[in-house]
Length: 186
Image (cartoon, rainbow, N blue to C red; front, side, top):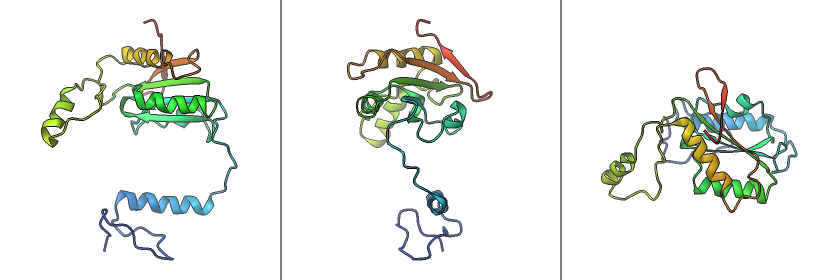
């Protein structure tokens, strides 16, 4: 009998297999057990080898490391809905640069993004539904290129970031896998 997702797995010396029909999380935990069986500590430092932080959308269609030819340890990867540069992205970039040595920032939005055409009405509808106003903005956009430019500008003008001279923005095409660079000036 499957264990309900809301209950923790019972401790067991032989609990390597997820229950038949288990939840997605059960399957992920099982995959992790198999991964850990063959895992060897690579002895890496937390500082990215390439000294780059990549900010991208959380879209499941983008295999960021493969798309950019990156290996484990090469970069910091920071993802959110839309790849939008929010206060939390600036927080992560600040830590990445000041504490962990990154110097370059790559921003990646993509075609077919769920934020395209969404409006702040989403936030208002959510507030009406749950009875509490979200403290965050949706950050929806209608123009991919312009939003990438806005994201580049937010990074370049942040007083918290040490390195703002190597900030580049791109749109990833989810049908071809190609990046298209965005001119910051338009």
